Amino acid sequence: MFRLITSNTTNVKADFLSGFTVALALVPEAVAFAFVAGVEPMVGLYAAFMMGLLTSIFGGRPGMISGATGATAVVMVSLVAGHGVQYLFAAVILAGLIQITAGVLKLGKFIRLVPHPVMLGFVNGLAIVIFLAQLGQFKIETTDGVMEWMQGEMLYTMGALILVTMFIMHFLPKLTTAVPSGLVAIVAVTLAVIGLDLEARTVIDFVRDMLPADQADSATLKGELPTFAIPMVPFNLETLKIIFPYSLVIAAIGLIESLLTLTLIDELTETRGKGNRECIGQGIANTTNGFFGGMGGCAMIGQSMININSGGRGRLSGITAALVLLGFILFGAKYIEMIPLAALVGVMFMVVLGTFEWSSFRIIHKIPPTDAGIIVLVSGVTVAYDLAIAVVVGVIVSALVFAWKHAQHIQADIYKDENGYKVYDLRGPIFFGSVSYFKELFDPVNDPEHVVIEFKRSRVSDHSGIEALDSLAEKYSAQGKTLHLRHLSPECRQLLTRAGDLCEVNVMEDPTYHVATDKLA
Image (cartoon, rainbow, N blue to C red; front, side, top):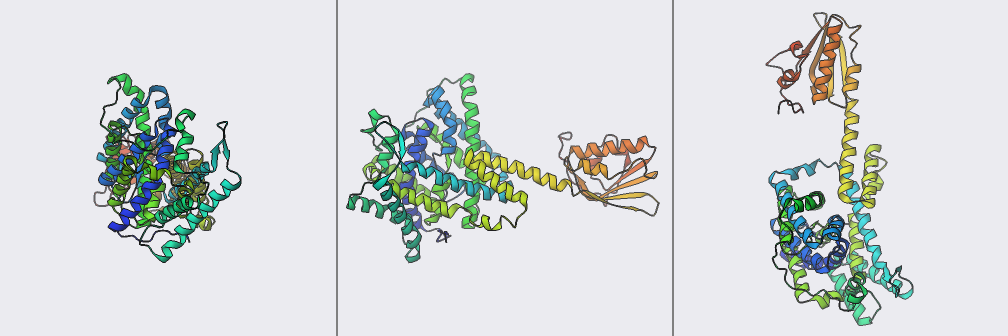
């Protein structure tokens, strides 16, 4: 029902029209995130323009839209409040350099380690966050300066316009896909509001609510071209100490959100983006932002979904969105200012419906309870805190669950060989999680004089496993018994300090693999 994607192929016309649609939706979000960070609206609009343009050119995921985002904006608040906007520009430059370094070192590939339950939780939590963010548009400022929920005719008008927008977006693609349904809906609702003289809040009303009362009357989205300037901060170690923690967090959050958005678009379009190139593209865009008065940012999942749902697949869609946004700033501010917020809210509500994985309700009782718990956990942390934090928490919990499950997979088939030796034929990995189970398999006191541990179907994965083998060798030695270790890798034999002499070497059959330890580094 909510599958809005109409094409998986690149089309110049579709890219241009979807880019135009995205540009319309970028304006209120860029302004809102600028106020979140404590900077002027134009700083957010410049960021949306530069991030969108440069990541579309240099990034690794055609069709993905970047701009000023809430996740990075909340990190900037204390820096701007405590040190000023110039320190923010310096921090954004450094964040960009960190991201470029991550791309050069090819760290982008690690996003592939994010488990599917975490991705499901990320997508569902994200849809909820986008939905909750739109609820703020249902509030108006009273004469006392207090924000209150809409009531009466204004609320009914808002609701009706949202429903009309969603109706157009849902049914128009069934008739034609020549133009993006989101663009048609925004234009149609805007013309209806003007033609019928309806009382509806517009983009400029939103901007005025964000400004102090003495500046509200002169509010406008009209601006000039961004100009090059080196941040006016002292170039010393003290400045670096101030901005580095912020830069590191901005860079990390930006890359996590961008690479997760890249992965999501990969799945939706059945194509594959380039994670390392995206890291470099994000870094170039953020570095440029710092020099041209922008607040930086990262990939925008909501705008990216609007673009993909509208048929945007190529780099032209992101470039168009950025250039059209710049055109609005320079020449068309008055037209953007009259767009009803209800139209943009309706577009975002359709994005929510298309983003949320409704199938997760169907499969929640069919998947392992741990996976279901991870989906709920990541969704909850996403809503309560932040997308990047939620993903990190989800990956950590998934890794712990994986380690716990595999820790119980260590087993041994016990028998006597032709020499009368007792053989423990191991199955499963020996690592930090399974060491305790591994030790419980043996009985040094009651075992015979010769004991063989067969590793043909087992591997020692880390230093904890090596220490467990050395400890076991000591116990058998204390009982005056001989322990034989067969089919260990050369690295394992090299790392064993007390049990190394007990290994039986078979060059033809012994496996070759690496152990996770720093001793051989």
